[in-house]
Image 1 (cartoon, rainbow, N blue to C red):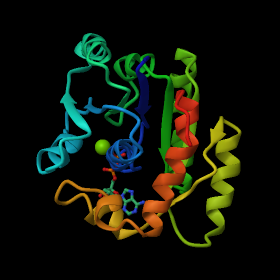
Image 2: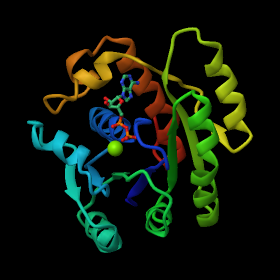
Image 3: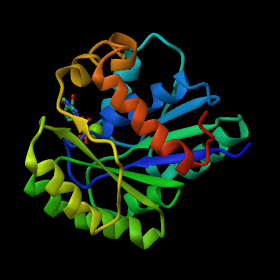
Amino acid sequence: MAMHTLVVASQKGGVGKTTLSGHLGVMAVLQNIGPVALVDADPQGSLAEWWNVRKAEQPFFVKTKISQLKTLLKGLEDKGVALVIIDTPPAVTQTIQAVMSEADLVLIPTRPSPHDLRAVGSTVNMAEATGKRIIFVINGAANRARITGEAAVALSQHGTVAPVTLHQRTDFASSMIDGRTVMELFPNSRSTAEIRELWEYLAPRLGFTVE
Ligand SMILES: Nc1ncnc2c1ncn2[C@@H]1O[C@H](COP(=O)(O)OP(=O)(O)O)[C@@H](O)[C@H]1O
Ligand SMILES: [Mg+2]
């Protein structure tokens, strides 16, 4: 079976790349799609720090230099990994473009703020240069805020926007303190439901079949 690769990227920091990489990785494990591996390509290593205090074995974890990514991915595929999620540093560089070129899909989290929306163009340009499919997801939305809808409209001019909005909720942050996620701490929460819906939207686009 072929390995599927999701790259989570955004030129902006603080938009939820690491939060979503960890959460989608655990959600994929819970959906029993086969072995899931997380790759931290951010030298800051936030995802690595989270995983280091985590007790569950899966998702598996690898930290890598971007220069070694290709070899690493080949090794993971040979080991039968079904899904790899790659968390990336916030920058616009050729190296990030190189990571994107390994993707089946590039997920771009974006906060619904004017600064973040204005910054999205450079991330999109990088992804487009690689010819990869991109999907935006709005993260950190306030309840019933009009700007969320406006952000979705603005983003849709650059590409596909996931029909699931992730809201600003402390459990997304607090659950990660001891290496877990909202699904593990608050399985019946709205946060868990949002991650599940996002996974169900992304999975077929990555080539998985969802029951
Ligand atoms: N939906 C959310 N609700 C509440 N806090 C969030 C949410 N998404 C991210 N955060 C918090 O925002 C900060 C930045 O998120 P992070 O995933 O580290 O972004 P990035 O990796 O893009 O820099 C972190 O403290 C994280 O816990
Ligand atoms: Mg990060």
